[in-house]
Length: 218
Image (cartoon, rainbow, N blue to C red; front, side, top):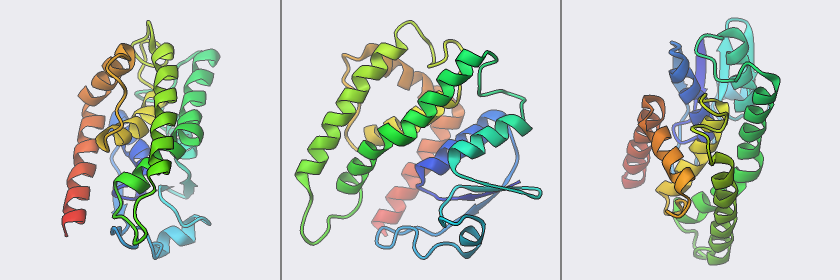
């Protein structure tokens, strides 16, 4: 199996964490990134495999899958050892809903933080209003997640799942850029600590931090 991977792609990070959790070997093909051009021009092989030209993309034998959600589903179907989805239909629905929620609702606020707090400021300066709106949106999301985690170890009870991967990748990124959950959200803070204790997540965030520091310094 090959994974076309972006060094700072949070969607690729979801896939890398899932592969690590499942203990799967794969060939990692890293696309170029720099602070000015980001991922442009698109990697030619990625552009040929994915009409959107984006990572992550996996090539699994004769099967090509792009989009992190579809890749996670493919891995679950073809490598069921160390499952990342509950057995019961209700649990599977909950896991999938949270993973999709993270992509579609949580990520936009996180992306605004990334644009305003991580990337170099444009000539016209930072958009303070955009950053403040993103902080407010994340505070709202934190409060909702706090309620969802009350009485649960993971989002699906006692099972670590794709829901935890999807939410943690984005919340962890926001936290590293100065927008963590409030300490009053005790369930959410404890859950993030449990996530960071997992080798798959600990190593992923350490690698992204080291890459970003080196790239921005250069």
